[in-house]
Length: 196
Image: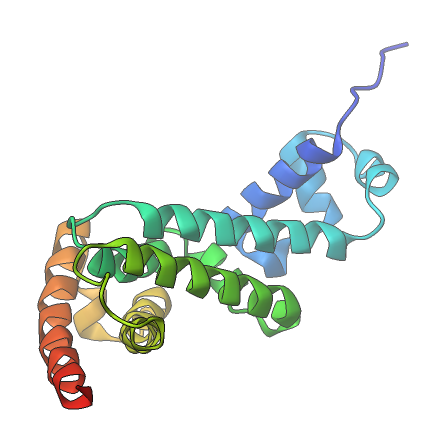
């Protein structure tokens, strides 16, 4: 009799993550995970308490992928890079982007969003260009940048905008983002001068 292959919880989480990355969290089922693992559903049901637990693990990992995108140097400008990382994440990781905005994981996403925002403010304040700015101002700058980035990312992810849909290369997205950031930055500088 052939021996059954043993699976660890990490194997199930990895398979689930790959299913979501390719097909979306709405298609995450025990059968889909089993197919990815080339097994029956038995190891899944014997290793995890619920599919919800697996879904939540996937959502937390999606946030880690976003953080990697936002930490990457795309333009050598930390402010632009964080927003651009968010936008490129929405394009290249369509279903993971949808996970971090899914209402059914609101508690996790709210907590992770707050952590991400706090880490982003810290990263901004470590940059020499922002070191003398009070934290409250840095938070305001980052929030306004996020409003722009989220709008761009959502349009890119949904494919609703013809103009955004025509951006078929990373270079085209980077160029448009940098151009729009320059316009926004001029407005933010004016607002900061006004606050002084």
